[in-house]
Image (tube, rainbow, N blue to C red; front, side, top):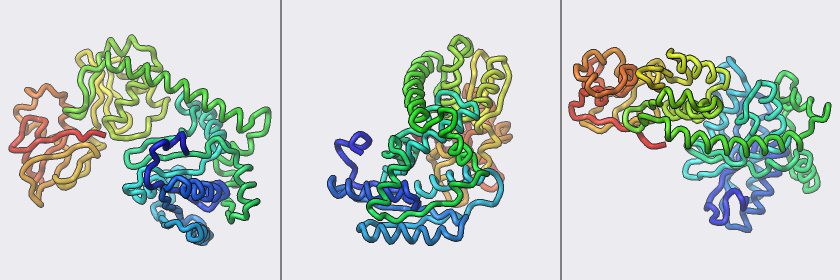
Amino acid sequence: MGALLGPDFPTEVGLAVSGGGDSMAMLHLAAGWARVYGVTLKVATVDHGLRVESATEATMVADECRGLGLRHNTLKWQGWDGNGNLQDAARQARFDLLSAWSGTCRYVLMAHTQDDQAETVLMRLIRGSGVDGLAGMAVKRVLPDMTILRPLLGVQRKDLRHYCQVLKIPFVDDPSNDDPRFDRVKMRRLIGQQGLDTATLAKTAQQMARAREALTQRAMECRARAIRTDFSEAGYIAFDHDAMAEIEEETRLRIIAEGLCDVARNPYRPRLSALEDAVEVALSGGTATLHGCLLIATKGQIVIIRELQAVTGCCSTRNMWDGRWELDGPHAPELLVGALGDALSDCSNWRSTGHPRHALRASPAIWHDDRLIAAPLAGLNNGWMARIVAK
């Protein structure tokens, strides 16, 4: 905790505690640490509602927190419709619920262990992940609304269970942890065979994390040389085609992936195989769709533009639109902001802006019902301005 947060510790830290042995051990370890350093803890349990026992388990955590003098909240998820990958949906729901719950508390602890890291690396290896995937889970992960800390990533699960048993700390075993239908359980059963062990796999993750850091630094340097237009003004990024073609493939993929995440305001990178295909198309002079963006080769450039189909929603002009645009102008309750789209043809001066047509179609416009009021980036201002909000 000292390495993660010190020496100037925050006044408050959140804990995600499921009731399993790992998180219950973390709860007690953190409670002892917080008393020494004067840090206030608050605890949340995410109840996915997928098992009848989950409510009882949340109550157990709440009771244990009460005994430790800690605040506890149960966060209930009711969002799964039965489609798609259940574990992926539950994981994303957990992040969303915790992010909303954390509020002004920036840091949230999660009890991932060395075993979890090993299973993650093995799953990603089987899926053909590159360096970033094989780096596994980061001990500190910065998200837009919170920072996830994993202080137990170097500790084995069996040691935490032993800690709970010796100190008679209650915990539960989720039966899904032994359900062979889930990929993580399959990986868990592979570990221990043919020389596979948690320590070795976790060491691989550390080595890949070091390689990722070096590759990221190289990508930043090359990006600065290849970029022509930044997204800070008009919501798109343009790179010099020839400069990008000369950069080694790994670095080029990293630059494009970062650009896609910036334009789409999506913290998660696209899958490597899809990214490779899209970049190949753009280098060959074509257009690819990926990550809610268009990757277009035009006029000696490779341009990353927000995809129109990804920005179909509308909201009040006083709200942030598409997670990145703020509007200034004569606000009124009946006005909405949405994508300009085909109404670009109503903006007679759009060519004089110098912005690509596709970028303007996906740019913010002010509407009154179906009537276009303004399109600031397309030269139809009418008293309105639009600007990108810094991440």
